[in-house]
Length: 324
Image (cartoon, rainbow, N blue to C red; front, side, top):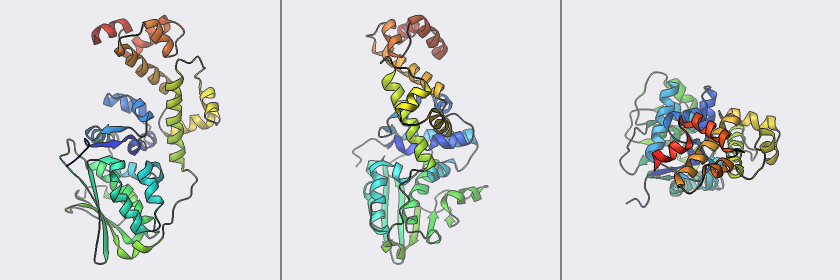
C-alpha cells in the first residue's frame, strides 16, 4: 500500500528545458502552454503530481513531433543531478551495490514507481513499473526512466552487455531510440527492463568526472538565477542580468549563455517571476496594490498596473474582485 500520492521530484524534469531549447522552444512558453508557472522549477527538491509529469512529457513529444522525446530527455539527465538517489548510486563500490541502491532508494525521487533488482542465472535485471493506475499515458516517462536506469550498469564501462526490453511496440524511427537506449533493444515485452550480464555485477564503477557537464552547469545556473529573482524582487536591489550574474559568481555572458541553453531568456524569466509573485500576493487578499507593486519590483502602481494588464488582460483590482 502506498504511503504517498504518486508524485515525482521536480529535478527529474529539469533536463526537459535544454531539450526544448535544442528545438528552439522556450521553456517559459512551454509552461504557459500547459497553464503552469515555470516557477515550480525553482525548487528542484519539490514534488509534482505524477499525472502532471506524464502530461508534460506527452506534451513535449506532441509539440516537437518526437515519438521518443522521453528517452532523449532521460539521456540528458545526469545521475549526479538526481539528488540523494543519484548520489547514492554513484557512491557504490560496484555495479551490484549500485543496482541495489537504485532499487531500494527509488522513493527519494518517485512516489508510485516500483523498481526491482533481480538476478537469475547468468542475467541481472532492473525492472521498472508503476505501483498503481496511471492517469495519463506513461510511455514517455518510461522511456526517460529507462534511459536513466541504463546508466547504472553502464558504470561498469561495458555497453555491449546491456540490453533494454520495452513493453512499447517498435515504430517508425526506432533508430532514434537507439541513440538513447543503445542498439540492444527488444520491444513488445511483458515488462520494461534493463537487462545485463551477471558478470558485470562485481565490476567497480567507472564513475564520471566530477567536473559538471554542460547540462548540469546550465540547469544549476538557471535554477539559481530564478531563485535569486524570486527572493530579491522587493529588497531594493537592481535585478539586471549583470547584477544577478555577478551575485552568482559569473559573467553576464556566461549566465546568458547558460540560460539560453535551457531555453530561458533573462527578461522573460524576470517578467514571469514578477507575474507569479503578483498573482500570489493578490490571492492572499491582505496587501494593497501599492504594496504589491513594490514587492514585485515596481516603483509605482501605474507601471505595475500596465504590466499586470499585459500579463492577464485585466487590471489588478479587477483580478482581485474576480478572485474574491
